[in-house]
Image (cartoon, helix red, strand yellow):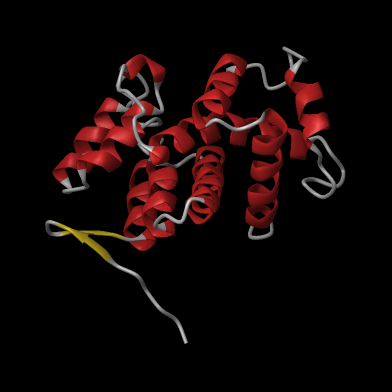
Length: 191
């Protein structure tokens, strides 16, 4: 038996199916799609941890960068406008805007803080898995932290934002890294 959960806001349905269609419409890069799916997995795990709606949080993670490929210099503002025109709720759009520090949108919800804390670190943990023969299997926070100190490894990932994100959600560094490793290892089974 399969259940489909639908959350209605105005005339808009927040569903993973609709989000995947939007992602497919705007993103052609496989690596960007995989990043969005990874952040979705992290957000679903955090929603479960905080007893929040996993569908909404997952869709937020899935769509956080959907505009980046088409509108890199206008990201995430272009995406926010698209989502607004599709009647996504303000708090959802605000969380997506808040994941970009330069937007100056405060992260004043736990969903927004988790998105910010997961975004860069998801990319980094995935990069770590790609250089390990066992991928995510057996990965520990200490190995991720060791790689974080190597500035040339996954150099495009902002280490300061990772630190800030961990601080904003009030987690201990090892705890947050272990949490994401666990969430992403389950996600990786599907890829």
